[in-house]
Amino acid sequence: MNVIHKLPFVLAVSAAIVVGIIGYKMGVDYGAIYVRMSISMVVFFIIGIYIRDFINKIEVEIKKKIAEEEKMKEEGVGENEDNKTDNNKGQNIDFKVEDQNEQDRKNNSENLFDEEFTPLKVGSVSVKEDTNEK
Image 1 (cartoon, helix red, strand yellow):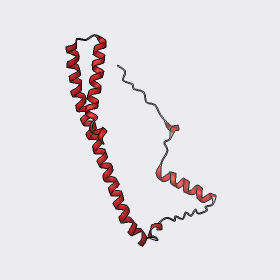
Image 2: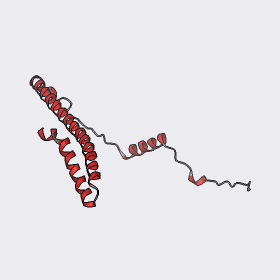
Image 3: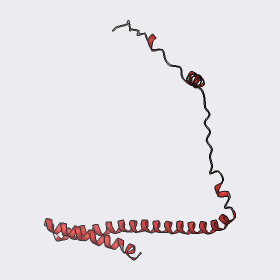
């Protein structure tokens, strides 16, 4: 937690040092380097504050979820002792497949296609030409 608390300062100083080194290597005037370093410190300090707050919010949410899970486990322990047999209800599923003879399957498949879909007659396609040419 102590490192997260220092994050904005460390981020701002690191960015300022990088900006200062780059400005010095490029041969920029010292006054311009100082201005750029101070601007980068302010900007990265603000970014560091947002990152620190974001991490703190995540940490608080994780602690809340852990506390809720522990509370649910404590409440669930008493209920599980009373209802051990209720947990297994609905676990068994029986599937039954009926045998059909070949003729019944053909009739069922034909009826199924007749009810849902009527295919287009492709053999009776006609093409009409436009007689009005411009």
